[in-house]
Amino acid sequence: MRPLSYTSFSTYRKCPFKYKLRYVDGVPEGPRHYYSFGSTLHRSVEFFYKHFEAPELDELLGYYDKHWVSAGYGSKEQEMEYKALGTHILTLFHELNSDNYLIPLALERSFKMEVEGIPVRGIIDRVDRVGSKLRIIDYKSAKRMPSSRDVSENQQLTMYQLAVERDFGHEVEKVGIYHLRRLKTIWSPARTLEEKNQFIGQLMEVAEGIESCHFPAVKGYYCQHCDYQLRCPHFRL
Image (cartoon, rainbow, N blue to C red):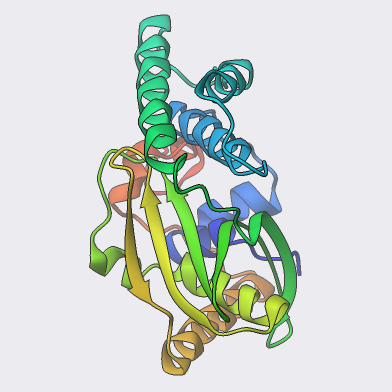
C-alpha cells in the first residue's frame, strides 16, 4: 500500500470515501487560503533557524515576502490582510527568539518507516535536544489556540514521536504545538508505551480498511468545507 502520512491517516478515519477520492482516484482538492498562509509562515520560521545566528529582521521579512503563497484567497483585500498579519507575527517572533537563539537538532525532518509492516511517512517541523532528551515541536497557524488536551490527544505528535525515537535513538521528553498567532508553545509529556500502542492499533485499522477497499462515506462537521460534495452519496442529487 502507499505510505500513510498523518493527513491521509486522519482523512481515512474521518471519511474513508474522501480518502478514496483524494488518494486512490487522485481527485485534487481546491486551494485554501489558510493552507497557503500556514505554509508561508512555516517556511519563514524554518528560514529563521537555518543560520548560525539569528538573521536580521529585514532578511526574515524579505524571505517571507519572496516566498508568499497567493493561492486560495477570496480577494486581494483578504490576501493583503493575511500578509500584514504574517508580517506582524514574524516581527514579534523575531523579537522573542533572536536574543536566545537556539539552533534546532532538526528542521523539516522527513521520515519514512514501517510500523507493524505499514509504511508511514511525514515531515516534522522541529526537533530540539535538551541534554540527552528530545523535544518535538509542530507549528500551527490556525486562529484557535490549541488547548493542553488538544496537544495531549494529538496523534500527529504521536506519529512524530515514533519516528524521532527510531531515527535518533534517544528518549523524547515532551511534545508540543507552537501556536504562531500567540507565539506560545503548548507542551505535553511524551507519549507513554500504552498511548503509542493505541495509535499503532488505529494505524493498523486504517491500513486494513484501505487494503480491503472499505471506503464508506461518513457524514460529519467537516462536510461543509469538503470539495467532494458533488461526488458524495450524502449530497449529490
